[in-house]
Image 1 (cartoon, rainbow, N blue to C red):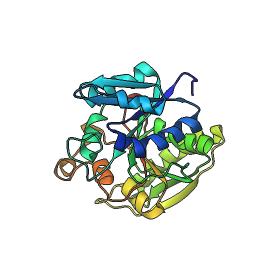
Image 2: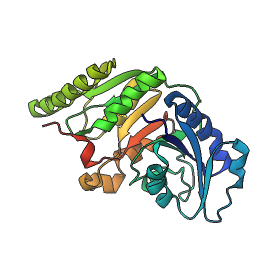
Image 3: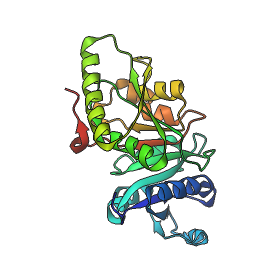
Length: 259
């Protein structure tokens, strides 16, 4: 990571700052990056951010344009935002609103539930199945091992189909090669394979990690179930009690093809 990069904490209100800011400070410290606070409001009143004695940006307008553009401008490598399934639909912390505002974000972003404790995640999990995966997802898994001292578990659905097993094995082969080159150790766990439950949700239920790394659904790949019941990541963020979730939007230049 470059020294001029930063972690950006999205703080819609002082109440949201109580949960997001301590975790954002932790991430910035562990990654060795400066921390920048961001508030976007309809009236542009962001003076309350001065109380935290940190660099901040207060904008008048909507969250999505700021989230789309600021990480690139500021050199942001990670964004953090509040998460609350009980929040009003208009609030950034509402799961659907959060995902909509971050849908085109080019950096990783962490949804931080209100009860999150500001301590390094001891156990981090990510899933590897038969589908194409993002190299960036694997890189973030390595960051938590290298910079946070976390234990990483790679969750693999148990397939019976030979074709799916082969595609999953190809993804794991790439993961092994990358992690060997970085000197990163990880554990492997088998999770149930279900057409009704996403691998990320299964990994969360079976492994109970302190942080989960997941890919947001490529909007080109959404099916009827996603439109009727919501995307896997939306169903994940709507759960009543979850750890912080680090999400990555899928980008063609970062895909690792399983076949």
